Amino acid sequence: MSNELITLQKIFDLAWQKFIVEGGAPAADNNGKCSYLTYDGRKCAVGLALPDGHPAQKGAGRFSSLVCGYPELFGPDVLAVMGDPTGRLDRFQARLHDSLQDKGEWTEDAKTRAAHYRKVAKDFGLTVPGQTTN
Image (cartoon, rainbow, N blue to C red; front, top):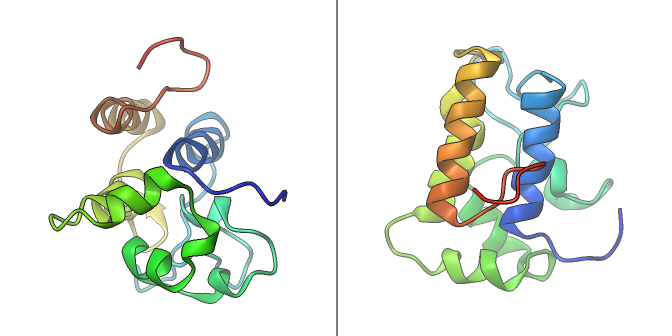
């Protein structure tokens, strides 16, 4: 991975490719706890953007906590949302991954997840890969 900063668009693009296009499995253990990187190599939406081997991959928990711990990894758009007192950054993570899985299995089919992702893109001003507008 390059040294480029992680943006919301980058996270979205990687998650779209992995979870919508490729149909990859969510990154959660049998108890349903999400992880940035699981013991068997699966990554959550945010985990897909983290540099391989970085200590941030070992974490679990809210996206905002990760950003607080490793702000140098993230672009200005992530840091700007970080300051939102409504928890918008954590909702971004949940809407792309956490709220769509249960115990490491998707709760919705790929078509429904894609529609859900399109709504996230619209809400966060992002572009769906392969489309010129969100």
